[in-house]
Length: 73
Image (cartoon, rainbow, N blue to C red; front, side):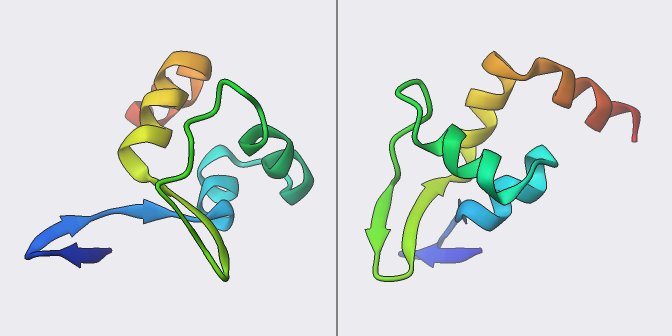
């Protein structure tokens, strides 16, 4: 977690998105390239990063079954 002017800023790269969704690296890159996936918050030399909140909102809309399994754990 990074800090932006004292405020926590939670960002994810492709690896964190892959882990969260429980999918392969190849599938992750297919998903983040889709038009309906949130745009990256920034593009760095190491790659793109997304706001965690944007990715979680996308998951809630497109993959709600992943939210249900999180609540049971």
